Length: 544
Figure (tube, helix red, strand yellow):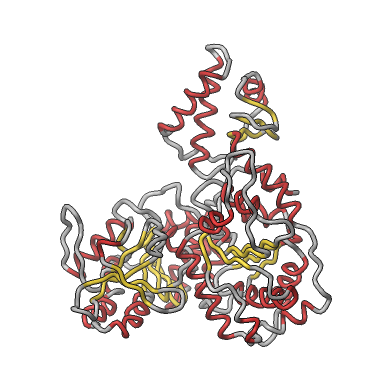
């Protein structure tokens, strides 16, 4: 069901859609306002991430008399199973469900595959969860490996890919992809590091994909026809497609991906169902996990987390609000705590060493240390705007640390200025979510923006070259997905907001490796933990 308890007036697009469809609904003057109200609710729900809304018998009876509504077939509006959809999203959901059910079939590896693959895992011994993940991945064309940070997803996927390369020979084509450019680069970096730790035959290691790409780029490579037309896109020329951070993939994008797979291709999704769902509509990963248990491997043991952080993450994701607050405020020790009243001072203090290092480092061969220092601490905000939002905290930090005052154009460049790219630029190789640092060039000392590549090298740009950006002292929690930092300061607003939920807080907490400090009132913190995001969808039901 759609939670309408926190909704305000419908946005203009809702009223526009309602008016447009109301003109063609074919209903009388008394019925049309009720019809338009339902369209407004559906549009507003879609903007909140829902796919559909539930309707009662009276509403179904009204809708069934409209000429723009059909039952279980494409039309401007569709009724299906007590739910109301826009026709496009009904098509996405129903077609994706059928495709996934077909995809979730046995592939049949050799009997010795399990032993071979688990032998490549760099742990002393593959645990029971890892063994099950390998079995599912090799026995099925569709597989989900779900787990939080540090549970070994990358370790497993490297071992699984290695086995597939050995068994299927040199012609096997594998694609690595992620929803965002930052996530794609992080995936590429993680696999590169894992390859260095895993004992693979040199001939096998050499055949691993050299790069990961965004889903947008992957699908453009295989697309020859419009997605909205009757023709299907040309299939992707890959035998195996691996998608990281799959919780961020919305319904429409997953439909496009599955539709583009060639016959007998494998699809492997990596992700954490407890993290934030996609910004756009749908919660595909969670729906698939709920409805396709034979294709899902859950990893729960973390090899990376501090125990106190792991405990806080577990209490948050389970909805235990009182326990989570009590642990954070008194029992978490040095690794987990609630911020003191001087929390704003913590914001600046956490970056002092970074600012000092950036100011005195002018040799590009030492810039790696500057980037490493910047990963030691990060401020994560629930909101972008407001007194506790990332925009305001970024301004405060810049004023305090650097002495910068806002100007009309806001263009101040100084050593150590961190920027977050907010728009993909494929020609420059910069992607939404990439973080760069302003540092001097060795040639003349002019300031440039430097970005780390997945292979550890640095690339530089003129400040005027880069696409749209934000300051990166403080990030929204949404923007932090796929990243990790040693110490995290999580800032929640002073008033309740519907974006506050346990998935948001869990995502923030699990960005920290060693220490997490939360800025929050007790009532706001507990409200966030208690509020579980539920997106209205029929996908889980269609998959069963």
